[in-house]
Length: 373
Image 1 (cartoon, rainbow, N blue to C red):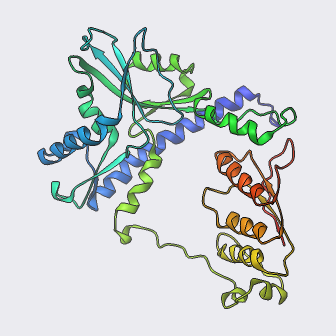
Image 2 (image 1 turned 30 degrees about the horizontal axis):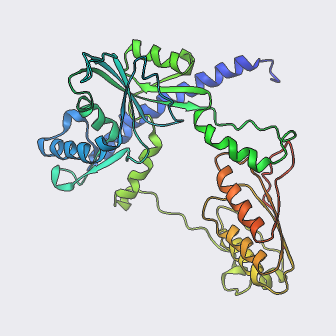
Image 3 (image 1 turned 90 degrees about the vertical axis):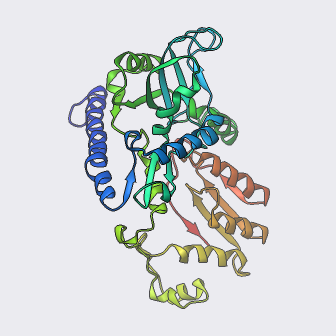
């Protein structure tokens, strides 16, 4: 680096800072956010706090919704350590005794399918607060013994592994970049492990076992005091109808020149219009491309595309323009991380309706946002 540090030194400093940030995240969650939510009648109920009615309902939920879709994997010579998906929720279980087949593995892995919700809202009538939630991890911890008949559960610890999600494609060597990337996508979930998050009460023996399985070191280990994926908490505000606890939604503005116009082209003829995103609405851009797709005076549209998503009104307008006989040229960046599959899908659709599709510049990522009509 410019200050003389080696790559290894930079990695160590980044790791130290990241560990500190993660520790602070969970401190804020447990010491400030959850207690303050509880005072407002929004509680995340721990197993030790379940009342009889809640426990009975949760038990029914486990047998009805959870047990049917999970498959515990006992670790023995005929059942090696499973392939663990990137950022998936898993549980390492320490066992004692023998199962129904007389096997004694001593450990098992329980993988939680992504179809299962990570946060479950309890019915209002079961408790003394309006909003009561439990984590899926709490439910599995409580009833994991039901998965191992005849055996004693000594410990159950949630963990999550983060894998390297980069796609290694030599753009100069491949003949068909789109086909090559499409072929690489299924392997993304099983790249090299780069981080292991585990419950802070995980035994040292199990911790070392997991580190060994993923070929990681202590510096790659993050012990967490709560659910391993805090992002799943983002759905809770949608369930809680308490506007007094939420920020007032921001509504982007629209320039005066565009507020009452029927044609964006007519407004532009009156002078240049500056749009300052995200403070001003992106709708005028959407309307511009939508009008261009059907305007008989438009002969060609050229546009760069980086992130599209599976349902893009801009891409729909480009398809419609090509179908209407416009000359449509689109630069699609296939290497947009985590959007590769969506971009490949749109590129295929565009080509099918006669649009010209270019896959960026070899060796570079096309981040630029440009539209020429």
